[in-house]
Image (cartoon, rainbow, N blue to C red):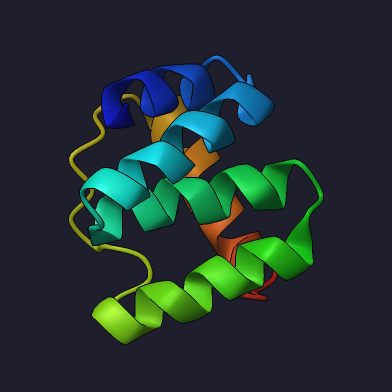
Length: 92
């Protein structure tokens, strides 16, 4: 589910991505799924939900955004990071 969610995310199909990422979190909760879900919600304008996911993420790890992103494509990296900045309440 995670891989499908990420694929939808990078296609800007945020509704479909969020559904898959929610399932991913149910099966295997981990920080990466929470990061992508928070970014999804932020890009969809669902900021309250995005911030709630960030709060859950912070319960797992203090690191909302990784400084060593494995994403090589700058556009993909910026899509994720801009969503996380919105979700965390930071200026974009």
